[in-house]
Image (cartoon, rainbow, N blue to C red):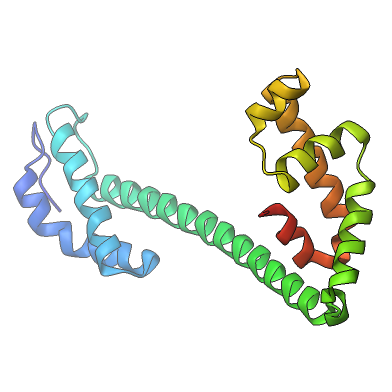
Amino acid sequence: MIKEEKHIDFEQTYIMYFSKMKYFAREYVLSDEDAENIVQDVFLELWEKKEILALPVNIIAYLFTAIKNRCIDLLRHRIVAKDTEDKMQAEYRLTLQMKYYSLEAFDNELFEEENIEQVLSKAIDSLPEKCREIFIKNKIEGKKQKDIAAELNISVNTVESQMGIAYKKLKSELKDYFPLFIFLFYL
């Protein structure tokens, strides 16, 4: 045990306890690099506080407590990050499955020209009148939103919101024809 002095003998403390503290941290964080970083941070903090720590101080208890708390913080962060990653992977997997099943169920006969026109026409006709007019001007006639706004004497924001409504309704209308919705979206 280090003899308690008026100030902590940092060099002696470092030499005596660094490897023990690293071994302790390594048991919990499972990585030499993470363990070494944690212990280095704790010793840096000790160095910065060496003049102001209230003496006598139980240096071993101080080091173990500080390292334990840093290990807990690191592990808590890793758990949250892993949970988030797992959720994102699950959502991605569901998206892939949905796209796979959508393509599996997709009727190839739909791509006959008459069927495509019929399905698209029916979907576009289901839009509210103003929404349909704006959608046709933008996607079929190829006009820019600001030109449509000027032509219809409405704001660009109104054109954008009507296009959003059109996409939402068309997505619902064409849910069984997802590739057609994509086709419409990128017209």
